[in-house]
Length: 161
Image 1 (cartoon, rainbow, N blue to C red):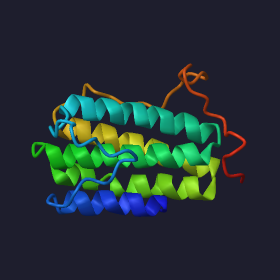
Image 2: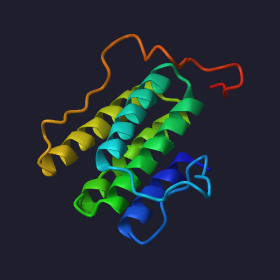
Image 3: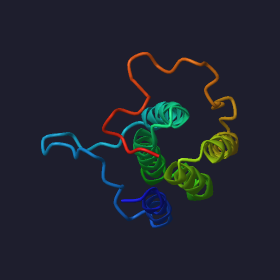
Image 4: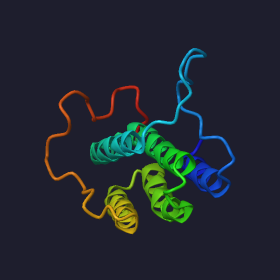
């Protein structure tokens, strides 16, 4: 499925809060407790996904970047669906930046990726400010070294561009 599809899933699922959350790659087991994660957990994962998305794109690992974008999109949908205090409009305004990132990944366009990630990051911070949490400021990673426990460069099995 395309990245645009996943971004559209975010917009539709948030707009119609009754729709299901986008499928994760691994559904929970039948014995798993079906409770909503705490908002701090959802947003913490979104922050990690944002970080990994950045490093994957900078390494030109477009397959990994696409995967992390889907994960980030799912996290934002979960925040809107599980937490009514998060206005749907705050999340749906993320649609355009998410689509822009998706387009950059599909095109394997470094410059567009950087610009769209900046717009996405600005959107995150605007939402935090609107929620009275402006003290939570997300930034584009500035360190040259990605997290040490994952390789971000494309593997031989990744698509080539």
